[in-house]
Length: 245
Ligand code: SF4
Image (cartoon, rainbow, N blue to C red):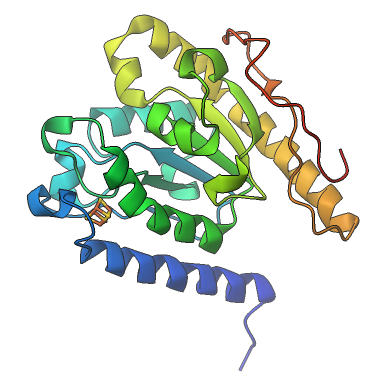
């Protein structure tokens, strides 16, 4: 019998971990959102990916189908992915909260907190090089204290408390916001063009850390700007540098 390659074994391990998390999410009653959901939406995508997209929470269609980003916003996200030659099955897509807030209201802080561990474990399972945040609630986890209008189209190491010590985070508007506002839509199209370069940069940083045998995480740096779409502020980003860079 042929032995599975190390890559295939690692992917199978990641898949098993993601499926176990999904099963827990489906039965979860940790916060009030379970009372009004039709189906929980753990997330979906390949376990072999280097890229995770993280939105806010399920909407009407997602709640019915148990899948993330399947409505109009999902179709728009797929269009954005196509613009860089990617498809949704090549990435992993999930949300900050896994059950639909009633009437599509914003998730409450205690709901985000209750659900946080699931996202942490999904990140641990995948160890993504790049996390693309969609909207301000997702951005708030990976780059707290920033404003989406100022950091969209930029990336930086994910905040140390985000559960992603080895990932770069890239910030985008939520696709639903792009569907409502022409300016945001144009910005979103431009921002998506920066995603492949952000992934390349993360690979470089992770390779450098691995080569040095360092236990340091992807180092803290100023944001790097990829598009001319952002309006950066001069005082909102720490310059602390860790590890090699
Ligand atoms: S939103 Fe998260 S914590 Fe709340 S019930 Fe759903 S899976 Fe559980």
